[in-house]
Length: 314
Ligand code: TMO
Image (tube, rainbow, N blue to C red; front, side, top):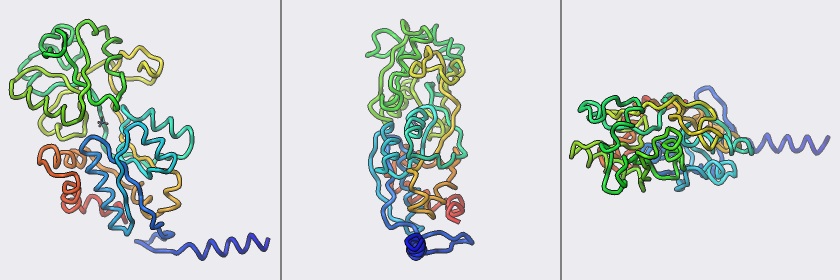
């Protein structure tokens, strides 16, 4: 009993209390909050945006480049503190696999709805380069429109880096019975997708690439192909035949399970953070259209949108 009492007293003493806007927080640890950076623009800008928000609250932050799938295991183990863009289609499985092992928590969902899907630039539809698009069945009649020098006479799907999806797109092509007419090429980077879209537009030629929304391309117009509707279990990795499109999905935040305890004020702010499609499109455009560095883009975004982020800290 005596020992128990002493422990409680010690715990009470070590908990310095701070008050913000009516809420009382135990003070955040001065250990850095570790934020991962990945290989698409909005994610990196948002890393610095959220890090900047934490810094205004007196926290220290650290950025680490991280693999987009392995990061959930790193968060579970505590090597990385948060993930601020958990896209359902590409990373939902890795997130929930890590959660099932214990150590990673769901820290809420952004307002933005997401889609990560193959599609074509708006002019492909407007100029009727493949009549019947965006319905996927139209693809059967025009592989030659999407053929390139390296596609062996088939139509080419330019997929993102393989670390995002694994073999889902080759498996989908097979599942849909399109494999005698289409092939997949993996891009080395997001920038390679944007370079190919720019080059195809200059020539007015047909092109199919992986893309997603929210993104900077929303402003110009990008049309996602409409595949058979997604359902749980339709992918080859989940036991299905792969003949389905991507889910109209969520965008979540994740955290190591100790983060609410070590940094209660920062965690509370992180749990409130909810970006819209507009916010995320702006973050990407500052880099991919305006050609700013990720850090400068984050600074500019924070300076211009205090009305959006200040309430998360209150
Ligand atoms: C994860 N991503 C937004 C690139 O599809």
